[in-house]
Image (cartoon, rainbow, N blue to C red; front, side, top):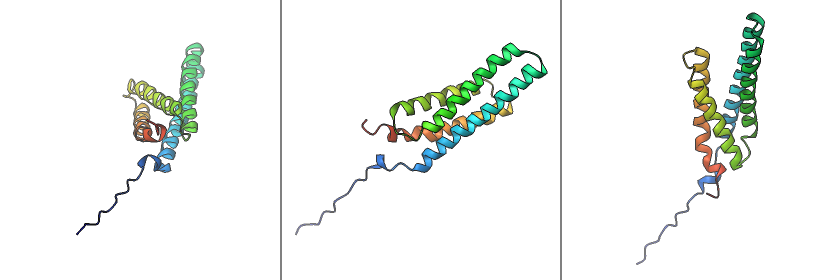
Length: 134
């Protein structure tokens, strides 16, 4: 007698990426961008208006606004499955995490550091979506 062999159908897990994970990463990016933009406004007010140190306030605020803009751009573009978008978002998140880690003694930077870790936690498992042919 022959035994009936069940055919095992393997699911292709690469195509079954939960859109909730992508949206969660995008929300974390946008939330981080809003926090950094608010910090840039605060630091400019504190340095330029209160202390009268306009030149260094301009440089620091420009740096913070560029960082906030890169985070916002990553949050907007992260839903599209392209390799450069994944690399760009990952590099922005790692760069921002390292910069936040340098000043982690302040409560604000601790919150931003935890948010950056959440961003990394959300985007690293999504590598499969961006590298289907690999």
